[in-house]
Length: 114
Image (cartoon, rainbow, N blue to C red; front, side):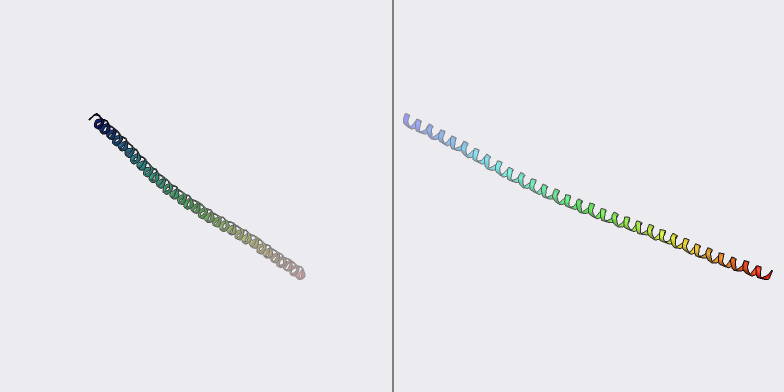
């Protein structure tokens, strides 16, 4: 009877230890699963952040290209205006020279009459 009690007590302790080990294994599995889910979420978050950085970089590049285009157009417009001013001055000089020649001719005719 004592032996039976000792055996029963041993079985109970063994069963208790097995229950504890099973509980520990269950906790470890849950912890691993939580770690895996957290790792997956972190990977997803990093992927989105990488995509966002790519989008932001592309946006900045597009903005820079558009600004460069506006700068080129502004410079071209300034060159065209300067060219027009130069042409206008050349035309004005040409008119002044023609007008001066005509004045000289008129003076010469006036002298001839006298």
